[in-house]
Image (spheres, one colour):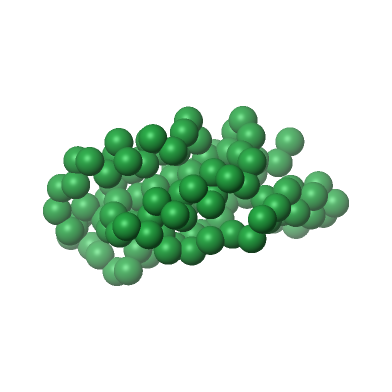
Length: 116
């Protein structure tokens, strides 16, 4: 079974809700995960965890600070390291996927199992 992880670095912008809804609406399956990594360099944002987790059981909230902030690059690395899925995708907190994108990704992954 092909599972998908989506890594979403964020500073908590309002567009994050639209992005998470679009990912959730892809028809996530058991083993899929959405790793939302907050750039804690911008300061505490306690309500963000609840906001992310409200989108469903696939959502995982992580934080990264360590004094490094570079447009989500360090936060993306945290998400990639935490991913347990077959495929791990990078995604911005203001991006959307076309309908059935994950279905198509799963089909291609099954057709070409030797491709990373």
